[in-house]
Amino acid sequence: MRLGRRLGIALAGSCLLVGLPSVSADARRAPARILVDAQEWSLWPSRASLPAGSVTVQLDNRGQDAHDLRIRRLNRAGLMTGPTQGVAITQSGQVSSADWHLGPGIYELYCSLPGHMRRGMHARLVVR
Image (cartoon, rainbow, N blue to C red; front, side, top):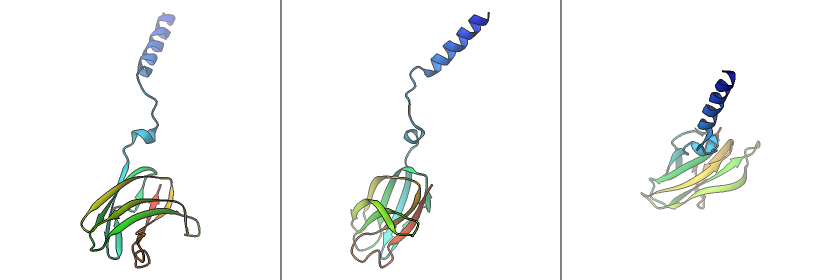
């Protein structure tokens, strides 16, 4: 009886494992999404924080001038560091998108066109 029970448990366990691919939790989770509205001279992200991992970013240019969107991590001194990710130059009335991968930290979103960041086209984003 004991052998039969052990065999049944072993078979049930092996049936659960057969055919299940090994996938990490991050790969199973759909990418986070964020919409950033741009207009002279402001950026308005749809959310102030995101989970770490894959992110689909949309830039909606509501202004009259072309704009782009860049992101860089901030160090403890508040200075931008590390690689830059971005959304291409987007013309007035258009929407562009990109897929980013972000680790935990505080980031600066900004328009990299000449003079735009200095005039106020930047915002902070927290990635948890």
